[in-house]
Image (cartoon, rainbow, N blue to C red; front, side):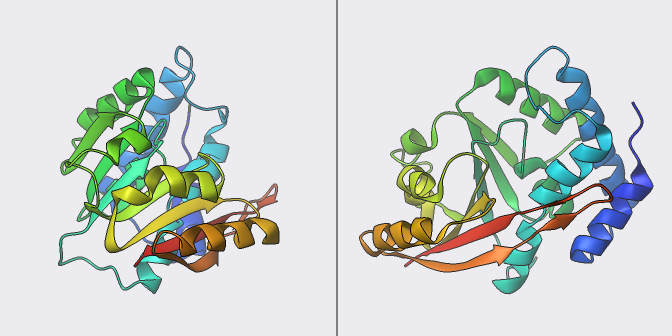
Length: 228
């Protein structure tokens, strides 16, 4: 399989203004290659065309760029991020590659997926990454995880209210929960705001990150919740 390195560079620059190093491009290229090879034996993704993986997994995962920029989260200070329900490593692995200064934890309850994630971490020689095979709601009850993270991400896992219920205890006071969603209906927003009012958290914003390819435009929003 051939990964279009030029397409990757163009897509990230157009979407976010990001220009990656040669090492970062090579790491993402290797990640995609390994993902599609392993996917023949282990069910990791339904997206199997390399170009689709670039847009629908890599570019989508890096939507966090908009949130980091808006919240002035920059290199130079310790920032801990945990990706819950990481699956095959999305969005956590692309985030770690592009923002190596983040301390990243990857969490999923499915062992076969975590085996692949650990293989990728080793293959790409990534440092400052931890993995745990556990459910988010259980991790939030453990001292090692509870209220320890500046950023919690959850991509295509469940509706925002469910993710809040399962993951908010991982967020430290002042930290943020970022939920990757498609369209967020008005009724969902009302339900979410009511839920957040009961747990000392607030809906900071819904950041649009629609992604345009040569074939289609697909809707993506990032629901940003701040724990007060």
